[in-house]
Length: 106
Image (cartoon, rainbow, N blue to C red):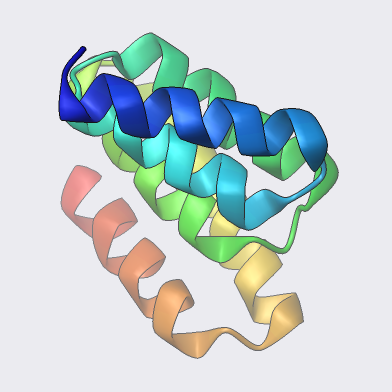
């Protein structure tokens, strides 16, 4: 089993114990993205946002992953929703990243 597979399995086991842990789910989404399983990554990013709409990095990395899948309209929607969420939460750093990504995407 590869190191990536081990990390994914470990994170899935930890999430089984703490399914509402956004940080663990975010780490799992990133592992899927890094392994090239973009569809699974998107599922995880969306899962985070369904339960924790203020988790700004999930909007950014979810949007980036949607772009890689050439789902540009969905990426724009995710970036825009993230801008709104980070404006409410006061996360100016992530908001700036989202605004830049949306601007580049057009």
